[in-house]
Image (cartoon, rainbow, N blue to C red; front, side, top):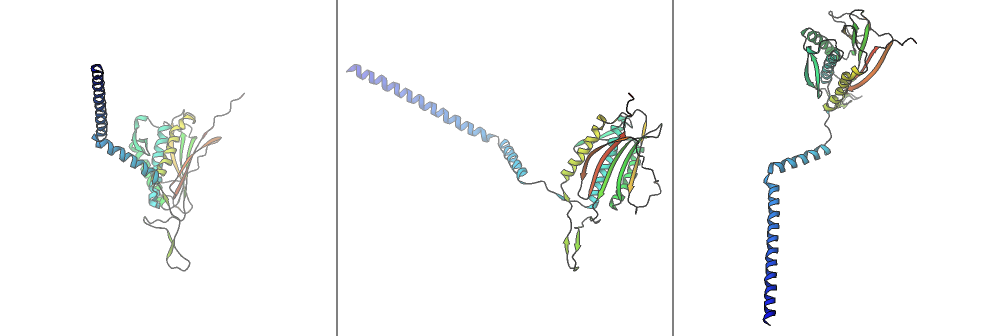
Length: 283
């Protein structure tokens, strides 16, 4: 009898010890859960950052790119600026002037090379100012950069930029392109010129990358070369006094590579480069 009581006592003590140990484990687990939960909120900046990132991703998924209204003046500014950077890039890539005379400017999401030579800068400014005027007047049709040998005067490359202007676009900066109805009462909205600035930038950047990559397929310019800019306008435009008439300066036996194009909805620019093909080897 005393043995049974002693055994029961031992069993009870073991059970109580196990229960105590189990409760300690539960308490520790709860504490760990509480600590973990606490750590999650101890860094409110991280939480706010995560929430902001999620909201930004949701916004990007839900809201499309916003288009902006393109005016004739606004489009003219974009196209004129493009010509300036394109000409500078060609001069650099084709090695017409020492690399040390160029400086890097951030544009179109790229590092663009721009001449720091005062004579070239002044020349380009005067040409681009006139191009800007012709674009506003809707008279510009084509810009050609001609590279020729100084020794022979032979044209070795022609970089051609064809321009098309929508004939219905008006000049006024805030024009809503409204034309009167047949009865003359009120008006109905004509064509809209809308495109996102980012889309235009991406299209221009693609052309600039192609210009930079042109050294991979264009022949090496062995002679010292110079460049000229030739502008094609419609028949109604007058030639400024400081300008002179020029022949097209075509290349005999030329190969042509079509480059990418870009559009502002008002202006469309298509680019291509023609170069003198190598003479076939005599077998």
